[in-house]
Image (cartoon, one colour):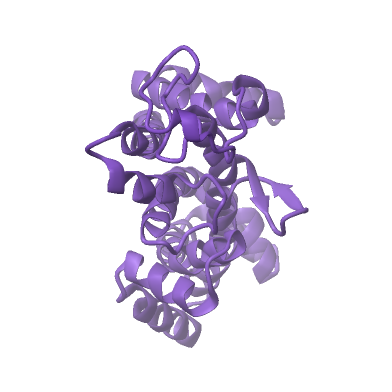
Amino acid sequence: MTTRPSRWKKIRESLSILWQSKVAVIGLIIVLFWVFAAVLAPIVTTYDPNAEDAQARNQGPSAEHWLGTDHKGRDLWSRVAYGGQIVLVKWPITNDFWIPGGVAIWGVLIALAIGCTLGLLSGYYGGWIDEVVMRILDAMMAFPTILLYLIIIAAIGASATNVVIAIMIAGSPGIARLVRSLTLDIRTRDYIAAAETRGEPGLWMMFVEILPNARGPIIIDAMLRVGYAIFSIGTLGFLGLGLPPPNPDWGSMVQAGHQHIFTNPWGVIWPTVAISSLVVGLNLLADGLREETLRYQ
């Protein structure tokens, strides 16, 4: 009689796959650096990110200001570290209330919930359900992603919650198509036929039998989408449609700094490095996991 492996054993096996990929480990180190910088921002910084100092404008890196200051004399390290909080650590619903998890992460998680549900319904039942769902999603995917972001934010206004909504709407169609293709493949397996023979209901088939067996590609795709969402948040901030001031948003920091790029390039360099390195780290992590997962199939 065989027994199922324990949950901790499954976690150890998953981590062993991660450690075997140098690319994934490098990506994980980059991501963890920004996560810890955001979480520990009140500890690792000594300045208020919005405090202006007229005597310290446009300064380069120094012992007092590690990354220099911007055109208003604000400490760039503080603004970069606190800017990571909204992206990765907390979602500010109002000025006085926030929930754990950054704007990019929540946007992708909600998009996953919607996309997985639509993809499972479309792939498992097929027929007219598949046609209706896919045609609606195809119409949404006809818009370039950044244009769809701009339309949504311009229509409902700029705020952290609205950015989450934009990420959710723009990301759901692609996730749904991925889950649909995985569902069409998995539903032909023998264990699915056995479950249908037992008379399991449709919801059980989709969320207990099919979805757990499709989790690998979905998780890897979600990591990539968090990176895309971070890049999109930076783009919206640069265009003035991101998080409203005085939030230390990386994109708005680049937008404000580029006006003084010849006198103080640090105001553009550091938030750009933050965005690009975090996106690269997530991509390396996803690519490394994908390569190791394919090796074990």
